[in-house]
Image (cartoon, rainbow over all chains, first blue to last red; front, top):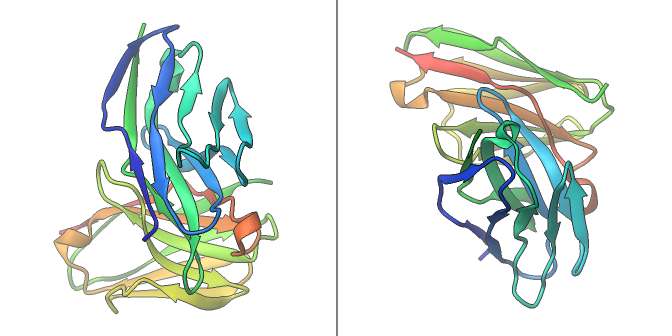
Length: 113
Length: 115
């Protein structure tokens, strides 16, 4: 079936550290892939997306590359800030009787000053 | 305007009450969604409306009743809920529900508590 697996959190980093949050997926065909972010007390916001293999999505210093060979879409940022503290969800879209977004379990990130 | 608004922000209701959650968007999107999110969990899809017609119902209990009066509005009517229905209810919209355009815009959610 279609599924998304994210690394378990929480992830705790110091400000200016390098961030990687791993995401792998299982899907038939070529799904679109997304990273959403949820700040405390808010809804989800789209952070970045990629719709085909080798695409790189980027936004606000975050990047992720759609790797078909490893079925991965890892999120990276070179230098995190305290304001990046949030929950990050990797997601894909599947098409089985209607298009549906499948979310990973989410990874909570804490950034310390 | 790239905003999805939801009202109320917080709702406390008893198990015998009837209440409604409201969602609105003015981005011209033709797909709208209801999700339920429990603490420390990802959102779970409940319903999808596409061009004002219900296209997906994820086997949600009948005590939740969605309604899409027009392309900008989405309601969720609540009746005889259980305490385990307490959660954050998120509304989202997208340009349509086809693969290529399914970037979703989320509202801030309604925090529901059932006593």
